[in-house]
Image (cartoon, rainbow, N blue to C red):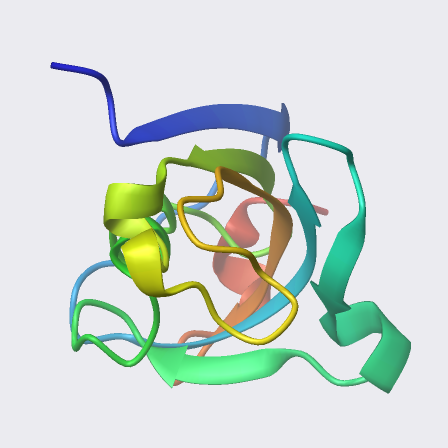
Length: 120
């Protein structure tokens, strides 16, 4: 059985409070297709991060799992298999059965001060 999600930390951060299920978070991201590297969506282009609640099924499963235990300011690369993305149905510019790559940056966790990161 293949792994549905591969997580690679690009920019590590230290903090006392990491993301957990039920947190409302704000995430900047860039999504590309693994097969050809074409970008299908990016919050950076809109100038505003995406806000959602982790673990509530508001986003694809690869995000609900891949953005857990993350500190504000941390950047991760998520490689998500179709089973944890859009599967056989695809979505908009994303073809069916696509492996997705997201470069994701946790901007903030609602109710948690960003100075809890452990930075000066």
